[in-house]
Length: 94
Image 1 (cartoon, rainbow, N blue to C red):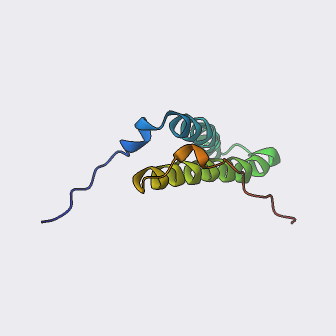
Image 2 (image 1 turned 90 degrees about the vertical axis):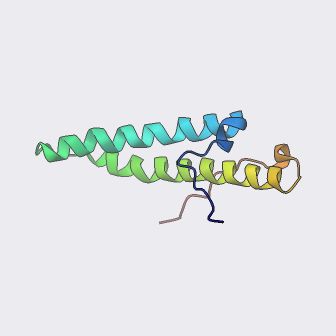
């Protein structure tokens, strides 16, 4: 029997801290990309600070998603998801 694929991660709605973390970190990244993408298509110059902020927002969103996935993995394996600490990835030296 083929497995059904859900389009939305409904399990994320069950985990409120993980859901809020993903939403809070994902939307600033998307707003930054969309706003500056439209500005670039209009021929406007993109400031250097945008290129400095983009990797920070991307790393933060990735950390939040990683946190949410680990919490769900612990929950499905019968563990306590509250034992998973949230950790930001270390910033690179260069």
